[in-house]
Structure formats: C-alpha cells, structure tokens
Amino acid sequence: MTKPSSPDRNPSDANKPLKLAVVGHTNVGKTSLLRTLTRDVEFGQVSHRPSTTRHVEGARLAVDGQPLLELYDTPGLEDAIALLDYLERLERPGERLDGPARLSRFLASSEARQRFEQEAKVLRQLLDSHAGLYLIDAREPVLAKYRDELAVLASCGKPLLPVLNFAAASAQQVAAWRTALARLGLHALVRFDTQAPPLDGERLLYESLALLLESHKGPLQRLIADQHSQAQARAHSARLLIAELLLDCAACRRSVSNATGQIPPAVQALRESVRQREQRCVEALLRLYAFRPEDAVAGQLPLLDGRWGDDLFNPETLKQLGIKLGSGVAAGAAAGAGVDLLVGGLSLGAATLLGAIAGGGLQTARNYGARLLGKLQGRRELSVDDGVLQLLAVRQLQLLNALGQRGHAAQHVIQLETDTGNKSNHAALLSTLRKARAHPEWSTLNPEATLTQAERQTLIDQLASTLNPT
Image 1 (tube, rainbow, N blue to C red):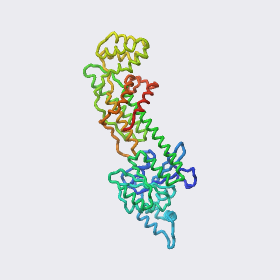
Image 2 (cartoon, rainbow, N blue to C red; image 1 turned 90 degrees about the horizontal axis):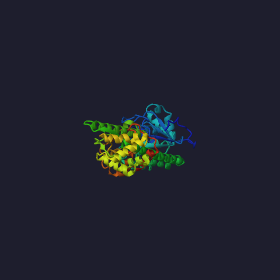
Image 3 (tube, one colour; image 1 turned 180 degrees about the vertical axis):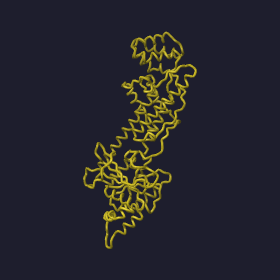
Image 4 (cartoon, helix red, strand yellow; image 1 turned 120 degrees about the vertical axis):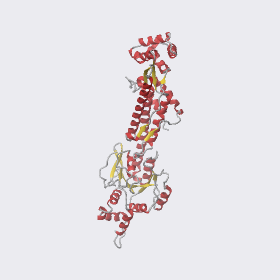
C-alpha cells in the first residue's frame, strides 16, 4: 500500500487505477474502513470524536507493482440539509441544471470556501473519482439528514455503493436502511463491519463494485485473487510460527538437582521461559497480520507441576542412540538399560549403554552422556507438560482466528485466556511433538541449539499441517 499522487483527471485512461471516494456523515467509520482495506493501522486518525478527518487522504492498492485501486478518505458531511437548500437556490429562473452542473456552480462560489468547506472537499473528490462508497452507521435510524446527504451525493452523477458499518450490533437498523436505500434507487449494498469484518467481506465489497463498474471488473477480480492468495500465505506462515513455538517448548528441558529447594525455582524459571516464548510468537503473529504489538497479550500460563519425564528413554531417543552408535548398542539392550534407569537401578545394561555412548563419538557423548550421567547422579530433567503444550496450541489458534476477523481500526486488546476449555482434539499434535521431546538440541530455549537440521524443519511442517484455527 502506497500513498497516491494527486488524483488524475483523465478517467478515460484505462491504465489508471480505479478511484473510490469513501464518503458519508461524520463519525461513521470512514477512516476505519480505509485502515481495514489497506491493512494499515496507522492510516489517518480514528477517534470517537466527530469531524476527526478534516482533509482528503488517499491510499493505493497494487498487485505486482501495478496500482489497481485508489481509496480516498474524505471529511464527514455535517450539514447536508442546509447544503441541499442552498443548491436548489443556485438555479436562475428558467434554468434546468443537471447535478454536476449545479455542483460546479456551487464549488466556484464563496460558500464552498467558507460555510460548506468540508462538504466541498467531499464533492470535489467524488466528482474526481469513478465511484463512491457511502458509509452508514447501521445503528443509526434513517434520518432526514442522511436522505439529504444521498441526494447531494447523487448530484455528482457517480455510482454509489452503500456500506453498512456496525451491521452486527444488537441495535442495528439494517432492515430500515435497506428499505430507505431502495426508495432512493440504491438496491446494491454491502454489510462490512470495520471493527470485525466478515471473512469474505472484502471479496463481497469488490464483487459488488464490479457489478456497478463493468469496465473495472478485470482489475477488481485481480485484486480479489491477490488478496485471497495473500490470506492463504499469511495463514500458512502463521501456522509455521505456532509450530515453531510448540516445538521449542516440547523440546525444552532443564536439568535440576533433587536437593531440597532446587526444584520450585527451576519450575518457575521454565514457566517464565515458556511465557516469554509464547509472547514472542504472539508478537510475530501480530506483525504478520500488520497489527501493533499492544493489540494482543498472552495471559499467564497455569502453574507448571513439571514433567519428571522419561523422555530420555522414549522410543525416539533410543532410535537415535541406535542410529548413532551403530552396532555398539542393540535396540533391545538400550531399551533394557532405559527401564533399569527408570526404576533407579544401575544395571549392566546401563553401564554398557554409557560405555557405548562414550565410544560413539564426542557429539554423541555431549548429547546423551551428560543427560544419562545426570540421571544417575540424582538430577531430574524438567520439561513442559502435555497440558501446557495443548494450551499453547489452543491459545495461538484462537489468536490466529481472532486476527483473521479483526479490522485494522479495532481498538480493543485481544486477551489470550488461561483456561481455553476442551483441548482433547489435539491428540495428533501431541503425537507429533513426542518426537521433538527427544531432540533438545532443536529448541531455541536450550543452550547450543541446532536449528538447521532438515529433520527439524520437516517436523515443523508436519506440526503446521495439524493446526487448524478453532
């Protein structure tokens, strides 16, 4: 999205982008609509105070570098009743001016520079555009001032597409607006909530415009296709970000002494590491969807009891040992050693396993020898509970779903709750994460992480494919 230059006054040029003026009464959400359509949270100024926008501002949408659509935010119409009366008095005896001719005379008058300065800015922009989007606060009753606004805007001779904002509100007046618009000859309209737009809202908006502006149907369809492609790419990238979070947390582990007083602070440190890692994922998702860092906050994680796991001896670890050590350790011997260690014994199998690790190479000893020795020395490996992994998955998917339905003018903060309800549908996710638990070197939360392995990326891709927004 880029800022356009001054509006071109040669609409016959087929290579020029479609120009749309966003018009309507003051404080109905025109700037909010521009923010949402451009995905720019910084566009213009959004406020509950009336008459916030005082000048025309524009934004341009392009595909592959080619500008396809220019959107112009205009000041709010404030006194259409008085303006319509003034326009009717402009005609001289015997004259029958059409709408554009009457407006041309008005725009050349001193009143257009003084009393009706804001209205004049709106009309100039609509006259210089191919069409207008007339934004309506659907919570408002159909008042005379709105009918007069439409009468004034119709004088421009440009197609108008009414857009019903806040149509999902409990106090909306959608039926009354439909009737009133139909009586004025405006039968096509679109419901588009700028705070929480429907998933297909942009597509319906542009398809409706294509019906009104046949000559621009091709560029609008191209814009629809591009936005659909971008939405899919964003969703895929988001699932990869969540998958990386889950892998980092599943593979994270802390070695802690069994000595009195050592475990609680280690549990708290692990909890804080996971919380910070989740917040980084939240911030990455917000950047991906072009929102601000303060638009969402991860709630506190539940208290971790800690996982005093046997992950050191899960099938994936034993498989890795067998692969790395070759014929030095048979799978059965390794499994036997694991069972002995779990029940606290130091068997011949365990000694054999330690010796095989020591002889398997320096890297193998680093990866597994220290962990085994720590187990024998009475240390525990603390890792993240399955329930917490499920909670992380559910919360991030809820955030992803919320971002997909959030307008870029929304002001409320998305809160990720501590209790997200039923997480039982993530069995496939936990099954995939079980492999990650055997690879602490894959987690950025562990020292000396190794993140370039193809197997790690393959697992991230597998995790992403199991994630679906709630």
